[in-house]
Length: 423
Image (cartoon, rainbow, N blue to C red; front, side, top):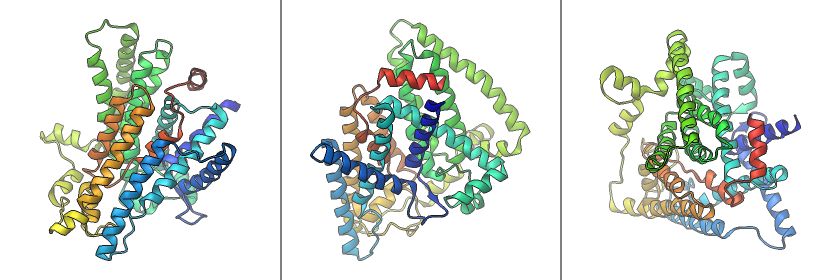
């Protein structure tokens, strides 16, 4: 029972980091990420004193330098254009807020586990995402629970209900979809890794079930989740194709059997609920609008992609803006959500190139920090550039965790304990 309580506590901390939110009884600017960052700064200072020196890794310092250069380029654009729009000119501050917030999370994990491996990190993120999906359904279907959550958590719930969008606790709209995508890609890696270990194959059904839950319910919250679903499945398929020439293993047959069994149970259940529950019917049609349009009209399209293609590809109209940008980002001044357009319009190709380099370096640092994650790092980098086709955001929060976690793939003692709790 004590172990379960600690695991739930750590899961809540991870959720407060990865899906930050504010409390109704505190200033909205003081969200859970900021609270964890303050705690992390104190922990970092204490650890530095204990170790007689700063605890920044080489990878963190290099990433911070690039983030600082990006901030300077944005500040230059803002200053030259006299806009006072500091959206990204203070990105170096955002960098360290995410870093120290991640530092506090990893330190709390080490308090219990001693080490935080990549596998442990992925397991916790997976079940946090599942919990967020379930919470969103509870908020949507249980009025009393919705009132309770809205009375404690400040996340613009009134606006979300007005536009008829589901939300969890800190998980809503595109930011939630981006985070679900990251987790689905990591989960694809975890499924492949555990599928190779005959001792862990029995627990694989839980990860397949989690993958399906996040894809289906996560898309009801944000259809950006589809990006992670495709990349996660792509990782699994690439691995499967790479092993086609090898002898079929018993573990691989068990994996296929698990997938068939889960689909055999969940597809009929989904069809039944789709036909007999109007709420689920509407949410499923929203989540997979493109699929339903393809089945019914023969054309794969959604309202959001139609708007993106029709009016949101907005580019600079003069050479100066192309080079250094206009210094405008806040609000919806250019009437576009597309990341490529908003970043270039804000800081020009100069700033955008530095920002892109920042994520290229983070992916490289990740691939060198952990052995055998080259494909995962490449797909994670690809995710950044794919998501910018739809929305302007970044995924540094996951790299912050990688920088602060231990540089080990797994730890046998920790993994055995996690597997026992999951079972």
